[in-house]
Image (cartoon, rainbow, N blue to C red; front, side):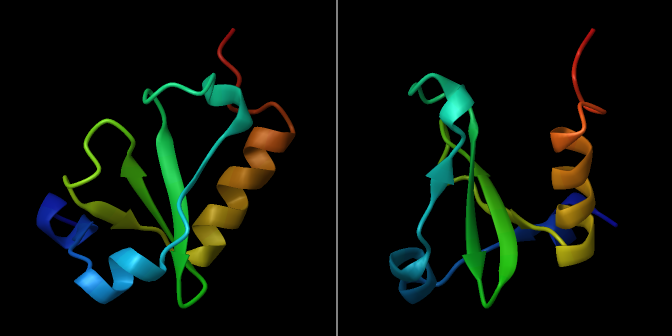
Length: 77
């Protein structure tokens, strides 16, 4: 998959309807990714470059990433 296929351009209507959230672990700064949902599909963007586009993630992959994060499989050691 090319980077262009990953970059989803949101319409102005979509931008207004997405409720973006950041992790409580981000420390409140703009150094994290933000997540939102469009038609139940997860989308993420860089909090420092909000106009830089978003990435749409398949729901099954999103659920797998959340499971891995919750079990500590993604912790840096």
